Image (cartoon, rainbow, N blue to C red):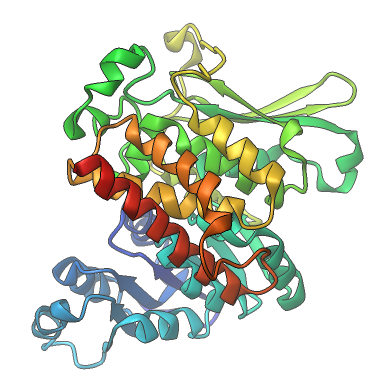
Length: 400
């Protein structure tokens, strides 16, 4: 249980509290000195019991759960805590995002997080976001809205947070390129033939990071890195040709910035999401995080290699999407979400994920009712829905 709340406490909301990023955020808050943070609102998709436990532990004012079938369990779990208000459904998730806070963590995975994150963005506060899909699907609109509302965007993905820490925004004309590192995932050393036979359990066995199922599968296909390329283009205002990717199996260097004079600045840290979250949570200050300290002498070596474009076509597809612009990035994201879900249900093969995305990119422009540009956020939601239809047809054909 948190202690007495200081009048100067930073008011915090966590969207996606029961996911890996949300849990890590609340772990840091629990370890902070008493009174430093005041938890305003927490949300979850369907894990009612865990949401209730977190709300009680952090004395949250409001909780919201998306899945209506979990409402009864949530209310039962909180019946001894009538001071914690309860909301159910998408409108309640957005209500949580709109509650007055100084710092909001947007950690709802996928396009489902777009509307709540937009609602949080409009508060004009500090928005920490692990939802890369917001920038992938609506990059220009999202960045314009952040500027309009005076919102400070704090990236939480380890790679973008690393670049954020060493990126000299005041002298961006001196920046030659940035590099995002990739672990390579569980299939880093697998042949294409072996990847074609990969099962769900194989793809979920990440060698370095502990993440949710969807992000872990994206790491296995390297689509996660493709989405991160697009996110970085918008976040740091760079063309994709200045965003490089290298495979770094130790996951110690998370991001690098190369300057015109040949200097390369890098951020290093143990592969623990609490480091980038702590960076965002305390920004512009620093806070103590319970992560393993680096022992470079014991580590002895750091390895790097270029990703294989033949075994991991997701990187090529992501670069094609950001270069094409318009609806392409949102189509890429929607099709990938459908394909990953189908793979997790064991309805399609692992290599079918990239094939589904490639087909959706090729066919979506011809889909009836598909917007030809992204002029408003409503266009993003239409593109997402119609691209999912194209991807679902691919899945149905492969299943048959």
